[in-house]
Length: 180
Image (tube, rainbow, N blue to C red; front, side, top):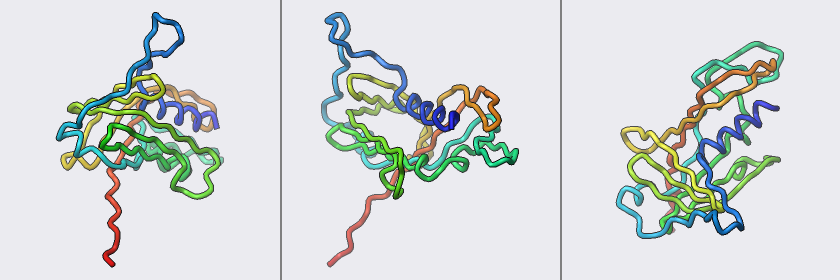
């Protein structure tokens, strides 16, 4: 369970990056939301992106199934609810993050929203006064991107392992309404 929480925390850190604190103190300012018209590049990025893979640079066994079966495929070792993550980037610069919203009966759900901007391979997100900057790596068709983070994971036996985790997001195709 600690490992699942670490992976969830790593995912959150991977997607929220470096934080700038917002405080009532006048010496600390809140990061303003991103505004303005979208660039052509950003317009093609608009849409929903779903988590489709999580890999590690080191083999790790996260399943407490009494079998020693380490793997670099973290996505395969997690539940559908843990892997049910969707980012939706809107044309008005708002975005939403939703975990456990598609798969039925997920006990742990989470959602939040904010503003976004994309410049080249740099994605900026502002949520509740915090700004994160992430470097994305797109596939040739720009229908998939990856983002990496590093941290320490605890495997099923309690051993801690330094890993680099790569999260893969794939663009969801727009649902086409049938013609009447």
